[in-house]
Image 1: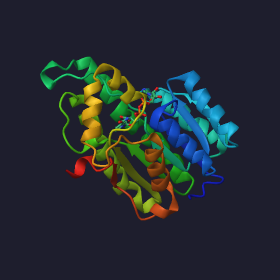
Image 2: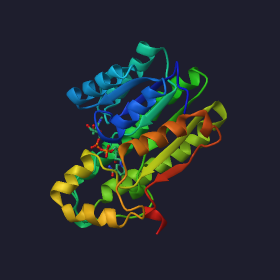
Image 3: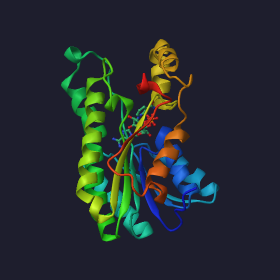
Image 4: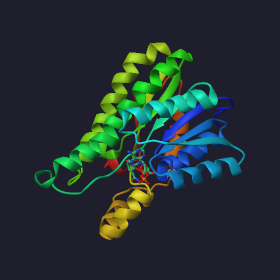
Length: 252
Ligand code: NAI
């Protein structure tokens, strides 16, 4: 168990899926949570669930690809809770599936804008506040598609490989000043993102399950647990790490 009493965490993409599960885990450990997402109703539902369970949270409508929104998100943490200790930069989109020669420039820019620029914008605002507070911990969501190639999702893969580059660079820059920066690389996790693939191409989910040595898809809570651990004092010597949580998928 981590003890996050009196701490503040931002979790982006927390209206559903991995972010929602993680926001609830941070709150269970005692952190006040800024729930940041483009989806307002679902984000407010995440906050209500946290409050019903006795936790503290606030929703901030945020498009992580918009610099002004990201500034407001971090300002909200400081205004509501007096500072920022942890950030889970998790919001992401899969984008269109096409071979590289058929990918549109629009899709490339959209996916990079949310998944890669969004993480950059988040860290750019979060780190100065953490430095003022004497330190903190950041976890960025990459993917197993940030470690090995996957056909037909070149913009997504580029964004997720890029997240690891941003993570390792910031870890070097701020390790001596008390800010740890890590990435988590989920395998195939049963979230609304995967639900969409299940509808569009059911075979792809059967194949993903068969290719996962533990024989099932991951649960969003299993990634939330990893993010909480990486932010906790138990991970005090862990920085610049891209932690794979994939049921063995990339070990083959
Ligand atoms: P999801 O689609 O279930 O949830 C993503 C959340 O991000 C949604 O609430 C959505 O509204 C929000 N979001 C999308 N664009 C946004 C933006 N511009 N600004 C703010 N919020 C935005 O997806 P899931 O599965 O929970 O994914 C979370 C992260 O995990 C993503 O970065 C994804 O790439 C990554 N991931 C997911 C895997 C999976 O199998 N589900 C595998 C590996 C990585």
